[in-house]
Every structure is written in structure tokens, then in C-alpha cells.
Image (cartoon, rainbow, N blue to C red):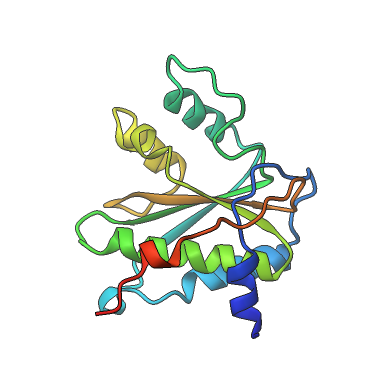
Length: 173
């Protein structure tokens, strides 16, 4: 089986990370994997904001996300790196393009021995009343908005990949 298929088979969401930060070379590989993702009409409009897991803006996003809630973990499970992907708000395919890019990042992370967690739960926080504040803090290009995020780092916990029901989830037409 080729390496890509093995990475797809092995990959699962990581919800616990070691404090050790991935190397610059590993992060550059993940960024490149995201940037190499195909985009509709080759617009290449996906932007990646890379944050250290200790960046104070992540705590602000968490506070906005959890107003009135007390979650057991923050949204990125103390990962040493969080990447926030934004896209051109006027382009109807930005969400799809960002989704493709984030999957490339996750599969590249798995191939490098890193864990990853795709994050959607901060959408309301980044799209709400503080939208412009967060867009500026995360250095989104003008006219861009949050699409998806991903936490990455060395795995402190492991989880089996999810199971599926091929008969239920696949129709041959």
C-alpha cells in the first residue's frame, strides 16, 4: 500500500499533544502541503495564519467561543501550533478550497508522525461581533474570513481511526 493510503488509513483526530513544538522544517512541509491543495478556478485564495499554541489570541478566541460554558479543554487541546485558514469571502468556493487544504495538512502531518485536529467549533466566535477584531489579529487578508482551523503537534494520546459502514455510506449508481 502506498504511503498516502497508509496515512489516510492511520489518521485520526488528536486530542492531546506533547509540549514539544514541531520543527520549522516540519511546519514548512505542512504549510506547503496546504498551499499545494487544488482550488476552484486555480484561485489559490486560501490563506494560512500560523500561531504558537501559547499565543494570547487563542485564549481570546476560546473565551468568545465558550461564553457561558466551561469546557474541559480548550478548542485546540493545548497543541503547540494552530493554523487558521481563511478565504476570500466573496468567492463561493473558499470553504471547499480551505477544506481541501486542511485535509492536505492533516495527511502530511500524519506522514511526518505528527497529530492533527481539524477545528470548526470556533466559527461562531470568528464570525460574530468580534469578527473584524479577530480577522485583524489573525492577519487575514482584506476581505477574507475564517473557514477552518487545524491544531498540530506531536501526539501525547492516540486514538484508533474511526470505523465506517461501507454498505450504508456508499451507493454504486
